[in-house]
Amino acid sequence: MRTLMTAPLSALALSTMIAAPLAASDDPLTGTLRIASDMSNPAPRAVMEGMAARFSEMHPDLEIEVEIIDREAYKTQIRNFLQADPPDVANWYAGNRMAPYVNAGLFEDISDLWDDEISAELASTKGAMTLDGKQWGVPYTYYQWGVYYRKDLYDQYGLSEATDWDSFKSNCQTLLDNGIKCFTIGSAAPWTTAGWFDYINMRTNGYDFHMALANGEIPWTDDRVRATFANWRELIDMGAYVDDHLGYSWQQALPFMTQGKAAAILIGNFAVAPLRDGGLDDSKLDFHQFPAITEGVEMAEDAPTDTFHIPSGAKNKDAARAFLRFVVSADNQTLINGADQLGQLPINSGSAVGEDKFLIKGFEMLSENSPGGVAQFWDRDAPAEMAKISMDGFQRFMDQPDQLDRILDQLERARERIY
Image (cartoon, rainbow, N blue to C red; front, side):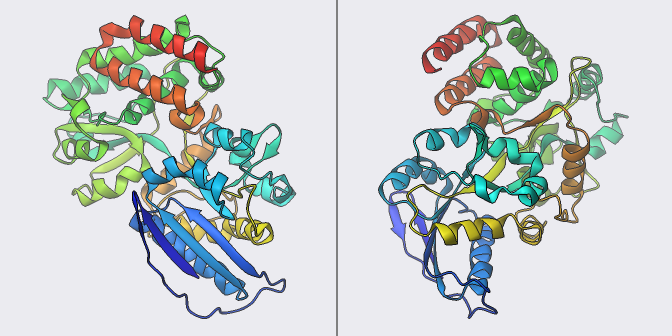
Protein backbone atom coordinates (compact mmCIF):
# COMPACT_ATOMS: atom_id res chain seq x y z
CA MET A 1 0.00 0.00 0.00
CA ARG A 2 1.26 3.46 -0.82
CA THR A 3 0.34 6.57 1.14
CA LEU A 4 0.79 10.03 -0.31
CA MET A 5 0.37 13.33 1.53
CA THR A 6 -0.58 16.34 -0.55
CA ALA A 7 -0.42 19.83 0.94
CA PRO A 8 -1.74 23.04 -0.64
CA LEU A 9 0.28 24.20 -3.65
CA SER A 10 2.82 21.40 -3.33
CA ALA A 11 2.91 17.64 -3.49
CA LEU A 12 4.80 16.04 -0.63
CA ALA A 13 5.56 12.42 -1.35
CA LEU A 14 5.53 10.03 1.58
CA SER A 15 5.71 6.35 0.71
CA THR A 16 5.18 3.68 3.31
CA MET A 17 5.03 -0.06 2.98
CA ILE A 18 2.45 -2.00 4.99
CA ALA A 19 3.46 -5.28 6.60
CA ALA A 20 2.59 -8.49 4.81
CA PRO A 21 -1.10 -9.34 4.91
CA LEU A 22 -2.37 -11.67 7.59
CA ALA A 23 -4.98 -13.44 5.50
CA ALA A 24 -6.57 -13.26 2.09
CA SER A 25 -10.23 -12.90 1.27
CA ASP A 26 -12.15 -15.83 -0.24
CA ASP A 27 -12.98 -13.51 -3.15
CA PRO A 28 -9.65 -11.85 -3.92
CA LEU A 29 -9.58 -8.35 -5.34
CA THR A 30 -6.91 -7.33 -7.80
CA GLY A 31 -5.54 -4.23 -9.47
CA THR A 32 -5.14 -0.89 -7.73
CA LEU A 33 -7.55 0.83 -5.35
CA ARG A 34 -6.95 4.60 -5.24
CA ILE A 35 -8.38 6.46 -2.24
CA ALA A 36 -8.44 10.26 -1.95
CA SER A 37 -8.88 11.48 1.62
CA ASP A 38 -9.11 14.79 3.49
CA MET A 39 -8.19 13.16 6.80
CA SER A 40 -4.99 15.18 7.13
CA ASN A 41 -4.87 15.94 10.86
CA PRO A 42 -2.74 13.45 12.83
CA ALA A 43 -5.49 11.33 14.42
CA PRO A 44 -7.73 11.10 11.32
CA ARG A 45 -4.69 10.39 9.16
CA ALA A 46 -3.73 7.47 11.38
CA VAL A 47 -7.32 6.19 11.16
CA MET A 48 -7.32 6.40 7.36
CA GLU A 49 -3.99 4.66 7.04
CA GLY A 50 -5.09 2.03 9.56
CA MET A 51 -8.25 1.24 7.59
CA ALA A 52 -6.26 0.95 4.37
CA ALA A 53 -3.73 -1.33 6.06
CA ARG A 54 -6.39 -3.66 7.48
CA PHE A 55 -8.18 -3.80 4.12
CA SER A 56 -4.85 -4.57 2.47
CA GLU A 57 -4.38 -7.50 4.84
CA MET A 58 -7.75 -8.85 3.73
CA HIS A 59 -6.89 -8.48 0.02
CA PRO A 60 -3.18 -9.20 -0.56
CA ASP A 61 -3.52 -9.13 -4.36
CA LEU A 62 -4.85 -5.58 -4.28
CA GLU A 63 -2.51 -2.60 -4.34
CA ILE A 64 -3.87 0.35 -2.35
CA GLU A 65 -2.83 3.95 -2.90
CA VAL A 66 -4.01 6.54 -0.37
CA GLU A 67 -3.56 10.20 -1.22
CA ILE A 68 -4.14 12.38 1.84
CA ILE A 69 -4.80 16.03 1.04
CA ASP A 70 -4.91 18.97 3.42
CA ARG A 71 -8.55 19.33 4.51
CA GLU A 72 -9.07 22.89 3.28
CA ALA A 73 -7.21 22.29 0.02
CA TYR A 74 -9.32 19.17 -0.55
CA LYS A 75 -12.49 21.28 -0.64
CA THR A 76 -11.16 23.32 -3.54
CA GLN A 77 -9.60 20.38 -5.40
CA ILE A 78 -12.32 17.73 -5.24
CA ARG A 79 -14.33 18.82 -8.28
CA ASN A 80 -11.19 19.01 -10.42
CA PHE A 81 -9.90 15.56 -9.55
CA LEU A 82 -13.35 13.96 -9.79
CA GLN A 83 -13.51 15.23 -13.36
CA ALA A 84 -9.90 14.91 -14.50
CA ASP A 85 -8.42 11.93 -12.65
CA PRO A 86 -11.03 10.35 -10.38
CA PRO A 87 -9.87 8.01 -7.61
CA ASP A 88 -11.84 4.88 -6.77
CA VAL A 89 -12.96 6.16 -3.35
CA ALA A 90 -13.19 9.71 -2.00
CA ASN A 91 -14.02 11.29 1.35
CA TRP A 92 -16.76 13.90 1.51
CA TYR A 93 -19.85 14.91 3.52
CA ALA A 94 -23.51 13.95 3.71
CA GLY A 95 -26.61 15.97 2.88
CA ASN A 96 -26.59 18.88 0.49
CA ARG A 97 -22.79 18.94 0.46
CA MET A 98 -22.83 15.87 -1.77
CA ALA A 99 -25.66 17.16 -3.99
CA PRO A 100 -23.51 19.16 -6.46
CA TYR A 101 -21.41 16.08 -7.25
CA VAL A 102 -24.46 13.84 -7.51
CA ASN A 103 -26.19 16.33 -9.81
CA ALA A 104 -23.06 16.66 -11.94
CA GLY A 105 -22.85 12.88 -12.34
CA LEU A 106 -19.54 12.67 -10.48
CA PHE A 107 -20.66 10.31 -7.68
CA GLU A 108 -21.76 6.73 -8.31
CA ASP A 109 -25.19 5.46 -7.34
CA ILE A 110 -24.41 2.79 -4.73
CA SER A 111 -27.96 1.94 -3.71
CA ASP A 112 -27.09 -1.72 -4.29
CA LEU A 113 -24.82 -1.60 -1.22
CA TRP A 114 -27.68 -0.41 0.96
CA ASP A 115 -29.26 -3.82 1.33
CA ASP A 116 -31.63 -4.62 4.17
CA GLU A 117 -28.81 -5.30 6.63
CA ILE A 118 -26.82 -2.12 5.95
CA SER A 119 -29.97 0.00 5.76
CA ALA A 120 -30.98 -1.24 9.20
CA GLU A 121 -27.52 -0.77 10.70
CA LEU A 122 -27.09 2.74 9.28
CA ALA A 123 -30.73 3.83 9.57
CA SER A 124 -29.96 7.04 11.47
CA THR A 125 -28.11 8.52 8.49
CA LYS A 126 -29.71 6.86 5.48
CA GLY A 127 -31.76 9.99 4.81
CA ALA A 128 -28.62 12.11 4.76
CA MET A 129 -27.11 9.78 2.13
CA THR A 130 -30.21 9.78 -0.08
CA LEU A 131 -31.02 12.02 -3.03
CA ASP A 132 -33.75 11.28 -5.56
CA GLY A 133 -34.51 8.06 -3.70
CA LYS A 134 -30.99 6.68 -4.22
CA GLN A 135 -27.94 6.37 -1.99
CA TRP A 136 -24.67 7.97 -3.08
CA GLY A 137 -22.21 7.12 -0.34
CA VAL A 138 -21.74 5.59 3.10
CA PRO A 139 -21.11 7.25 6.49
CA TYR A 140 -18.24 6.34 8.77
CA THR A 141 -18.50 8.78 11.66
CA TYR A 142 -20.57 11.56 13.15
CA TYR A 143 -20.41 13.69 16.25
CA GLN A 144 -22.73 15.70 18.42
CA TRP A 145 -22.96 19.43 18.90
CA GLY A 146 -24.15 20.89 22.15
CA VAL A 147 -23.28 23.04 25.14
CA TYR A 148 -19.93 22.23 26.75
CA TYR A 149 -19.70 23.99 30.08
CA ARG A 150 -17.58 24.53 33.18
CA LYS A 151 -19.26 22.26 35.72
CA ASP A 152 -17.15 23.68 38.53
CA LEU A 153 -18.38 27.21 37.78
CA TYR A 154 -21.97 26.04 37.57
CA ASP A 155 -21.57 24.32 40.92
CA GLN A 156 -19.94 27.40 42.42
CA TYR A 157 -22.92 29.58 41.52
CA GLY A 158 -25.63 26.99 42.14
CA LEU A 159 -26.56 26.54 38.48
CA SER A 160 -28.01 23.43 36.86
CA GLU A 161 -28.19 22.39 33.22
CA ALA A 162 -30.82 24.46 31.42
CA THR A 163 -33.65 22.58 29.79
CA ASP A 164 -35.66 25.59 28.59
CA TRP A 165 -34.94 29.07 27.27
CA ASP A 166 -35.84 30.92 30.47
CA SER A 167 -33.46 28.85 32.60
CA PHE A 168 -30.78 29.20 29.91
CA LYS A 169 -31.02 32.99 30.16
CA SER A 170 -31.29 32.90 33.93
CA ASN A 171 -28.06 30.92 34.19
CA CYS A 172 -26.46 33.42 31.88
CA GLN A 173 -27.53 36.40 33.96
CA THR A 174 -26.14 34.84 37.13
CA LEU A 175 -22.78 34.34 35.44
CA LEU A 176 -22.75 37.89 34.10
CA ASP A 177 -23.58 39.24 37.55
CA ASN A 178 -20.42 37.50 38.77
CA GLY A 179 -18.18 38.86 36.04
CA ILE A 180 -18.16 35.75 33.85
CA LYS A 181 -19.25 35.69 30.23
CA CYS A 182 -21.84 33.05 29.46
CA PHE A 183 -20.32 31.85 26.19
CA THR A 184 -17.07 31.99 24.36
CA ILE A 185 -17.08 31.95 20.57
CA GLY A 186 -14.50 32.62 17.88
CA SER A 187 -16.35 34.03 14.90
CA ALA A 188 -13.41 35.05 12.72
CA ALA A 189 -14.56 32.12 10.58
CA PRO A 190 -18.36 32.56 10.48
CA TRP A 191 -19.25 28.86 10.60
CA THR A 192 -19.17 29.07 14.40
CA THR A 193 -22.11 31.49 14.27
CA ALA A 194 -24.01 28.98 12.12
CA GLY A 195 -24.09 26.60 15.06
CA TRP A 196 -26.00 29.20 17.06
CA PHE A 197 -28.36 29.86 14.16
CA ASP A 198 -29.00 26.15 13.67
CA TYR A 199 -29.94 25.51 17.26
CA ILE A 200 -31.98 28.64 17.89
CA ASN A 201 -33.87 28.18 14.61
CA MET A 202 -34.51 24.46 15.16
CA ARG A 203 -35.64 25.14 18.73
CA THR A 204 -37.81 28.11 17.68
CA ASN A 205 -39.38 26.69 14.50
CA GLY A 206 -38.49 22.99 14.31
CA TYR A 207 -36.40 20.75 12.08
CA ASP A 208 -38.77 20.71 9.10
CA PHE A 209 -38.87 24.51 8.96
CA HIS A 210 -35.08 24.65 9.30
CA MET A 211 -34.55 22.27 6.40
CA ALA A 212 -37.16 24.06 4.27
CA LEU A 213 -35.22 27.28 4.85
CA ALA A 214 -31.97 25.53 3.90
CA ASN A 215 -33.68 24.30 0.72
CA GLY A 216 -34.76 27.79 -0.28
CA GLU A 217 -38.47 27.17 0.28
CA ILE A 218 -39.02 29.94 2.87
CA PRO A 219 -38.22 33.66 2.54
CA TRP A 220 -35.62 35.03 4.91
CA THR A 221 -38.01 37.89 5.63
CA ASP A 222 -40.60 35.45 7.03
CA ASP A 223 -41.77 36.38 10.54
CA ARG A 224 -40.72 32.94 11.80
CA VAL A 225 -37.14 33.63 10.72
CA ARG A 226 -37.34 36.99 12.48
CA ALA A 227 -38.48 35.17 15.62
CA THR A 228 -35.27 33.13 15.55
CA PHE A 229 -33.14 36.26 15.37
CA ALA A 230 -35.23 37.91 18.09
CA ASN A 231 -34.41 35.01 20.42
CA TRP A 232 -30.76 35.17 19.45
CA ARG A 233 -30.67 38.91 20.07
CA GLU A 234 -31.81 38.39 23.64
CA LEU A 235 -28.44 36.76 24.32
CA ILE A 236 -26.51 39.39 22.37
CA ASP A 237 -28.20 42.24 24.22
CA MET A 238 -27.45 40.59 27.56
CA GLY A 239 -23.75 40.62 26.70
CA ALA A 240 -23.67 36.83 26.82
CA TYR A 241 -20.73 36.41 24.43
CA VAL A 242 -17.07 37.26 24.93
CA ASP A 243 -16.06 40.64 23.59
CA ASP A 244 -14.30 41.05 20.24
CA HIS A 245 -15.09 37.49 19.17
CA LEU A 246 -14.71 38.49 15.51
CA GLY A 247 -10.97 38.55 16.15
CA TYR A 248 -10.71 34.94 17.31
CA SER A 249 -10.74 31.54 15.68
CA TRP A 250 -12.61 28.81 17.54
CA GLN A 251 -9.31 27.55 18.93
CA GLN A 252 -8.31 31.03 20.11
CA ALA A 253 -11.67 31.34 21.88
CA LEU A 254 -11.10 28.27 24.06
CA PRO A 255 -8.75 29.93 26.60
CA PHE A 256 -11.63 32.16 27.76
CA MET A 257 -13.24 28.96 28.96
CA THR A 258 -10.15 27.22 30.31
CA GLN A 259 -9.23 30.39 32.25
CA GLY A 260 -12.74 30.70 33.70
CA LYS A 261 -13.55 33.96 31.91
CA ALA A 262 -16.44 32.27 30.07
CA ALA A 263 -18.55 29.39 31.31
CA ALA A 264 -19.61 27.54 28.15
CA ILE A 265 -19.29 27.09 24.42
CA LEU A 266 -21.71 25.79 21.79
CA ILE A 267 -19.60 23.57 19.55
CA GLY A 268 -18.98 20.05 18.31
CA ASN A 269 -17.31 17.25 20.23
CA PHE A 270 -14.01 17.95 18.45
CA ALA A 271 -13.42 20.72 21.03
CA VAL A 272 -13.18 18.28 23.94
CA ALA A 273 -9.55 17.28 23.33
CA PRO A 274 -8.15 20.85 23.27
CA LEU A 275 -10.28 21.79 26.29
CA ARG A 276 -8.83 18.83 28.16
CA ASP A 277 -5.36 19.80 26.98
CA GLY A 278 -6.09 23.26 28.40
CA GLY A 279 -6.54 21.81 31.86
CA LEU A 280 -10.24 20.96 32.07
CA ASP A 281 -10.56 17.41 33.29
CA ASP A 282 -13.92 15.66 33.48
CA SER A 283 -14.61 17.04 36.96
CA LYS A 284 -14.58 20.55 35.48
CA LEU A 285 -15.97 19.98 31.96
CA ASP A 286 -19.45 18.70 31.18
CA PHE A 287 -22.04 18.69 28.39
CA HIS A 288 -25.76 19.28 27.97
CA GLN A 289 -28.25 19.39 25.14
CA PHE A 290 -29.21 22.81 23.80
CA PRO A 291 -32.44 23.73 25.64
CA ALA A 292 -35.96 23.91 24.27
CA ILE A 293 -37.35 27.28 23.21
CA THR A 294 -40.81 26.89 21.68
CA GLU A 295 -43.13 24.56 23.56
CA GLY A 296 -44.11 21.54 21.46
CA VAL A 297 -41.19 21.80 19.03
CA GLU A 298 -39.37 18.46 19.04
CA MET A 299 -35.68 18.43 19.81
CA ALA A 300 -33.45 18.18 16.74
CA GLU A 301 -29.67 18.10 16.72
CA ASP A 302 -26.68 18.97 14.61
CA ALA A 303 -24.62 15.83 14.02
CA PRO A 304 -22.33 16.34 10.99
CA THR A 305 -21.65 13.09 9.17
CA ASP A 306 -18.46 12.27 7.27
CA THR A 307 -18.69 9.93 4.33
CA PHE A 308 -17.01 7.88 1.63
CA HIS A 309 -18.14 7.90 -2.02
CA ILE A 310 -17.29 6.11 -5.25
CA PRO A 311 -16.63 8.55 -8.10
CA SER A 312 -18.54 7.67 -11.25
CA GLY A 313 -15.23 7.63 -13.14
CA ALA A 314 -13.59 5.13 -10.77
CA LYS A 315 -11.61 2.38 -12.49
CA ASN A 316 -11.84 -0.32 -9.81
CA LYS A 317 -15.45 -0.18 -8.64
CA ASP A 318 -15.51 -3.76 -7.36
CA ALA A 319 -12.69 -3.00 -4.93
CA ALA A 320 -14.29 0.34 -4.07
CA ARG A 321 -17.60 -1.32 -3.17
CA ALA A 322 -15.80 -3.88 -1.04
CA PHE A 323 -13.92 -1.11 0.75
CA LEU A 324 -17.15 0.75 1.52
CA ARG A 325 -18.69 -2.42 2.95
CA PHE A 326 -15.61 -2.77 5.13
CA VAL A 327 -15.85 0.87 6.24
CA VAL A 328 -19.42 0.53 7.51
CA SER A 329 -18.90 -2.76 9.33
CA ALA A 330 -19.67 -2.67 13.05
CA ASP A 331 -16.18 -3.75 14.11
CA ASN A 332 -14.45 -1.15 11.96
CA GLN A 333 -16.70 1.67 13.13
CA THR A 334 -16.18 0.68 16.77
CA LEU A 335 -12.43 0.77 16.25
CA ILE A 336 -12.05 4.00 14.28
CA ASN A 337 -14.43 6.02 16.45
CA GLY A 338 -12.84 5.02 19.76
CA ALA A 339 -11.64 7.65 22.21
CA ASP A 340 -8.03 6.96 21.18
CA GLN A 341 -8.85 7.22 17.45
CA LEU A 342 -11.34 9.75 16.01
CA GLY A 343 -13.03 10.18 19.38
CA GLN A 344 -16.43 10.41 17.67
CA LEU A 345 -19.58 8.33 17.32
CA PRO A 346 -20.04 5.21 15.19
CA ILE A 347 -23.09 5.10 12.96
CA ASN A 348 -23.48 1.34 12.72
CA SER A 349 -26.07 0.38 15.32
CA GLY A 350 -24.09 -2.76 16.10
CA SER A 351 -20.97 -0.80 17.07
CA ALA A 352 -19.84 -0.03 20.58
CA VAL A 353 -19.38 3.53 21.80
CA GLY A 354 -15.97 4.46 23.16
CA GLU A 355 -15.50 4.60 26.94
CA ASP A 356 -15.56 8.37 27.07
CA LYS A 357 -17.98 10.53 29.03
CA PHE A 358 -18.76 12.86 26.13
CA LEU A 359 -19.13 10.13 23.53
CA ILE A 360 -21.56 8.30 25.80
CA LYS A 361 -23.59 11.46 26.45
CA GLY A 362 -23.64 12.32 22.76
CA PHE A 363 -24.74 8.84 21.78
CA GLU A 364 -27.53 8.88 24.35
CA MET A 365 -28.71 12.29 23.19
CA LEU A 366 -28.73 11.40 19.49
CA SER A 367 -30.27 7.98 19.96
CA GLU A 368 -32.80 8.78 22.69
CA ASN A 369 -33.63 12.50 22.67
CA SER A 370 -33.55 13.88 19.14
CA PRO A 371 -37.02 12.96 17.82
CA GLY A 372 -37.17 16.08 15.68
CA GLY A 373 -34.38 14.97 13.35
CA VAL A 374 -30.64 15.19 12.76
CA ALA A 375 -29.26 18.10 10.74
CA GLN A 376 -25.85 18.09 9.12
CA PHE A 377 -24.89 21.68 10.06
CA TRP A 378 -25.81 24.80 8.12
CA ASP A 379 -22.91 24.79 5.67
CA ARG A 380 -23.73 21.19 4.76
CA ASP A 381 -27.53 21.52 4.68
CA ALA A 382 -27.67 24.68 2.56
CA PRO A 383 -26.09 24.99 -0.91
CA ALA A 384 -22.51 26.22 -0.71
CA GLU A 385 -23.13 29.71 -2.07
CA MET A 386 -26.17 30.31 0.12
CA ALA A 387 -24.34 28.90 3.13
CA LYS A 388 -21.45 31.31 2.68
CA ILE A 389 -23.65 34.38 2.22
CA SER A 390 -25.91 33.49 5.14
CA MET A 391 -23.04 32.67 7.51
CA ASP A 392 -21.49 36.05 6.68
CA GLY A 393 -24.91 37.46 7.60
CA PHE A 394 -24.96 35.58 10.92
CA GLN A 395 -21.50 36.90 11.72
CA ARG A 396 -22.56 40.45 10.89
CA PHE A 397 -25.71 40.09 12.99
CA MET A 398 -23.73 39.10 16.05
CA ASP A 399 -21.58 42.19 15.59
CA GLN A 400 -24.32 44.59 14.44
CA PRO A 401 -27.75 43.27 15.47
CA ASP A 402 -29.40 46.58 14.53
CA GLN A 403 -28.63 45.73 10.89
CA LEU A 404 -30.99 42.74 10.89
CA ASP A 405 -33.42 44.15 8.31
CA ARG A 406 -30.61 44.83 5.84
CA ILE A 407 -29.08 41.43 6.49
CA LEU A 408 -32.37 39.59 5.91
CA ASP A 409 -33.08 41.61 2.74
CA GLN A 410 -29.64 40.65 1.43
CA LEU A 411 -30.20 36.98 2.25
CA GLU A 412 -33.60 37.05 0.59
CA ARG A 413 -32.14 38.52 -2.62
CA ALA A 414 -29.52 35.78 -2.54
CA ARG A 415 -32.21 33.12 -2.04
CA GLU A 416 -34.18 34.34 -5.04
CA ARG A 417 -31.06 34.28 -7.21
CA ILE A 418 -29.44 31.05 -6.02
CA TYR A 419 -32.43 28.74 -5.86
